[in-house]
Amino acid sequence: MHDIEPFYNWREEYAAEEDERSPFYGRTYDEFYFRQKVYNYYIHPQWDEFGSSTLYLKILYADYAEGFVFMELIGEWNDCLHNDIMYLKREVLEPLMEEGIYRFVLICENVLNFHGSDDCYYEEWYEEVRDEDGWICFLNTLKHVEEEMNATRLQDYVHFGIPYNQVNWRPHKPAALFQLIDALINGRIRRIG
Figure 1: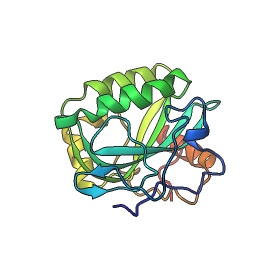
Figure 2: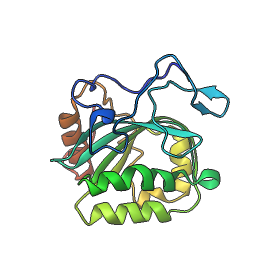
Figure 3: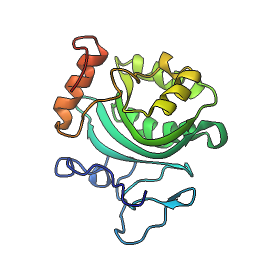
Figure 4: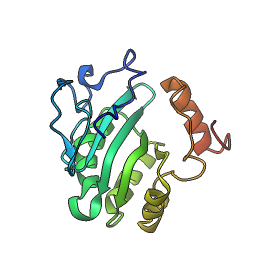
């Protein structure tokens, strides 16, 4: 896991540690010192911690004028034991919403497990973004992760699964990818290649 880096092709356009409106503004990274772990496995030092002991993320791009953000996650999402959604909501999502972000794309292909608890924080998040014509989308969840999310009833609040599970997002620029996902969510297209 230590060699899985956050996506870096948009770094010329956006860096969360340089964005004064980002919850990660001012962070510094040591490329050679690996200290963060998911259980016994070190992860790359570019991932940001936000309070969870098993889940990390990277804000890949934020557009405050258009009100959207792309985040990539890695690790185990564990609401049952660690209440990861609470930390995510309070430490990352709410500060972004205060800055006008109401459309969230979370790239989940490196979320290796999901252990749900209840859906209260997801419902709260959904209601807050819905009031601003926003939405929440999880891209590329693994099948067993999607099944657990369904069992927790997240589908009532979050767009995930088919057709969001095989989005080839890397070749796109952030604004174009946002427009495609928005069109998919709002029914203007059926799938993204």
